[in-house]
Structures are given as structure tokens and as C-alpha cells.
Length: 516
Image (cartoon, rainbow, N blue to C red; front, side, top):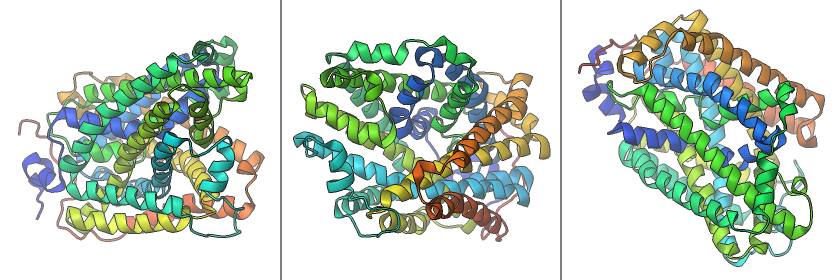
């Protein structure tokens, strides 16, 4: 039975939910969540396409006025209200606010189901790199021999080359989740984040010594100052910061609820935010140094080889590996980095769901991990280890990331600020133990500036999707998987928020007692 005091006392309610044993472990886990696939394969191309070196100006502005303030909002909610996203919002604003938490949980559930698939691909490509299994045509190998992609709607035949590594990924993830917050998530982050940094530094150093590397860096960092007058460039900067920091969809709320009351949350947020951006810059250097080599080896301009996402990771890099000296080493480092970064992010995403289920249904860690993990793994295997897995994944990812996450973030910020008027309380809570004091400037950024910026990004994304069908996919795929998944998450959030809590838990805000 959890009493009101237990909800506030780390020695009682927090330990029953799980906890990080130190601020260092919490920071590593938060960095592990923030540093994911998007840092490696999205940021370099976004920077290149939006002004090169000049893009760093709107990027840093977005980090300071949107990314870090929103990250601290998530920290404040989780650290003050000591629960999963639904429980924290319930304590913040009552039954209606709980819907925001379940909305975030639903988004994480969808992301987890398809995110694991990309990690499984990276696992296979780590081994493919050793003997360059893709031969002379990486694109044909990816979509033909490996993924066996069919037109959307033609069939759902299983692809064994994806099914088995995907099954292994899910078994590993479930094992980590059963182990718990510290022995699973914290221990993994403590090992994997230093390993990721070392592996990627080795990749960057190797790439910098390739012929043509300086041409690639010049293409990335040469500033196009005229781009700063383009509103779309600023929208891209805010969107990149937002997507890369794992904010707005329950992860940082959940992680912040696992640390002690005396933890310096504002200083921790600054460390996490700067570490994430530093890794993105490192990724940009490594990726474009390699692309510079590829362009020189192929006798083409950088813009003919520069790409992002699946094209960069599974087509461009295999081509680089085939041409570069010690290409197998580059391949193992690159795809190994994708696996590590992807796993730490996937674990943070699925923990949002597990934590919410534990709080709502009063389940043990093992039971909740199986209740969440087994259905998620089953859905992932049935949908994405198939011949139509790629278009399904691409569509779900685009709409959930561009609309689901952005919309819930804007709504939650505005609700906390203007409906529940809790921003002052959260600021006072963070300032009690924080090394970076938050003033009225933080209230203005979270309550006005950041929501306005994200609304603009949301409108730009919506305009682009309405102008032409995404990737030319058929209407049934866009409406059913794209808009349908986003709408289903919201409907389920409303339903779940109205189900009774099956544990004796105080749903009111816990008292502030940092001296315990």
C-alpha cells in the first residue's frame, strides 16, 4: 500500500517503483535515450540542407530557447510528482490531465514497435560489413535480397533475415526491462554510453584520414548566411532539437521520477542537452568526412551522395565501406554504433509504457515487462518482418514523429502553463536543489516561445504532407497507418485515462520534502 508519504519518500514509493542509484547513472541513461539513430543519420543531412555552418546559429538558438527549457519541464514534472507520465499528470491536474500522460504512452508504444526493426537491420549489417555481403549494388541488396520489399498491399510474407535478428533484439530488451531500473536500464547505460562514444570517436578519426574527407567537411560547414533569412531553416532547427532530445513524450518524465529528491535536475539537464548536441556535431563530422571520400572516389559532387535516414545508413555507407581502406572496420564501427544508440533509446521508449502499466495496474516489474514486451514484440514481428515492412515503418515513423509527438508536446506545455497553472510550482521545485536557477525567462520560454515555435513547425509539416502524398504512398496507407495510428493513440489515451487505478495510491500531488 502506498501512502501519501510514500509517494514523496525515496525510501518507500520510489524504491518500490525502482530508482537510479546516482545522478551519474541518471545522466548516462538520459543521454542514452537522447542519443539515438536520428543523431547519426538525421542531423548531418539536416544541417547540410539548411545552411551548413550557418545552421549552427538557429540550432543553438533552438537548443537554448526550446530544447533545454522543455527538457527541464519534463524533469520538473517527473521529479516533483514521482510517477510515470500518466500518474505524474494525474497528480498535476487530475483525471483530465492524466489523458496527456496516456497520449505520450501510446506514442511510445507505437515508436517501440517499429524502432526495434531498424536496430535489427543494423545488427545484420554489422556482420554484413565483414565480407561486404551487399556486393556492388547496396541499394538492390537492401531492398531486394535483404528486405525483399514488395509494393504496399501486395503481401505480408515473412522475411527470415529480418525476423530472427528482430526476435533477438526484443529478447534482449525484455531481459533488460525485467532486470529493472538500476540493474537493467542504469547498468546498460553505464556500459553502452562510454562504449558508444569510444566506437564513434574511432569511426570519426578513421573517416578523417580518408581521401576527400576535408571536401566533405567543407560541404557540411561552409556557411550559407542567406539561409538564416529562411523561416524553414529555423523550423528545421527547432524540429531537430526537439526530436533529438527525447522530450515531450514521457521518457524524461519517467526517468526523472527515478532519482532522489536532492538531485540537481537543472544541472543534469544542461549536461544531457549539451552532450546530445555534441554527439550530433561529432556525427556530422564523421558522416560527411566519409561522404567526402565517397564523392571523390565516385567522381561526383557531395550533393549527389549526401542523404539521410535509411539511404545514408544502409546504402551510402555500404558503398563507402566497399571503397575505403579497412572498410570492414568502418562498417563494424558505424553499424555497431547504430545498434548501441538504438538500443539505449528503445529501452527508454518502452520503459515509458512499462512504468505506466505498473503504476496503473499495480504489477511487478517482471509481470509488467512481459505484459508490455510480449505484445509489442509480437506486433513488431508480424508487421515489420514482412515484405511490406518498409512502407509500413516509413509511414508510421513519419506521422507519429511529425504530428503525434509535436502535438502532444504543444498541448501539454499549454495545459501545464495556462490550464493547470503549475509552471511556477515546477520552477520552485527545480530551483530548490538545482545549480542553474530558473527565473521568469524560463516561464516565458515554456509558456509562450517554445509552443509558438513548435506550432509553426507543426504547420509547416502539415502543409508539406497535404501538398502531396508522403513518398507517393497510396491513400489507404497514409490514412490508415499514418493518420490512423496517430488518431488511435489519442482515442486509447482518452479511454485509458478513464479506467480505475488498481492500486491504493494517493493521486494528489506529493508534499515537497527535500530534507529526507
